[in-house]
Length: 296
Image 1 (tube, one colour):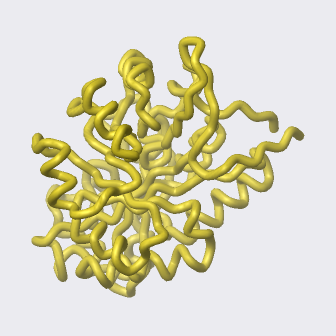
Image 2 (image 1 turned 45 degrees about the vertical axis):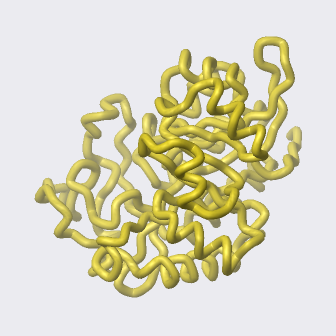
């Protein structure tokens, strides 16, 4: 078995004849291939050679940290315990449920209309602790390299106290959980909610932070609203241009756009010298030679 040990996040690739550092992140594991934010999806992403696992968090009534994009059980991706369809809407609020209740929903057997080739697997929303343990066990058993975890805290002012705790409590629950399992050097905290990033910047200044952006505001405006220089600026890829990438990198800010699924776009963005890509299809990045090769 060949062994690889990488510094967090970064690996060296050759693209169009030039050595370049690139971080391939499995979005919600590998949403295009397996049910999102589930252990099977994260294990698949690791086997494709990603350097970062990207995931989202919610909090339960009993203060458990759950891996879930929405803070509710979504009818788009989940069924009840008897494989019945769920009602549309946000009534199945994770913040009003215990984790045992959350775990009872099947969030892998239903066909995903936006990802029709996604493999159906009977599975559930896992705890963050279980994702970390399963991923680290897999890495040690098979691939022998370390990955980073890019963790999104899903919050919004209108959701405080309804769908999630306030940013401070949410953040402290996440930090305390991670601190039991991983060094903070392998963690990036990302959020669209700049309140979250400001809190981490003040209370946990050694943790890397990524500003998620989907608005049409200028880079200067977004950075001014944030109030400090983040490690990563992570916009919707359609908001980027070659000049914007150069602008951000000249300031010492890494650029890692989301969600990049088309291989032509992947190649274009890498030619612009982005620092990484977040993708639903890490297998496509692998086919282009942008992920780590390893031997089992």
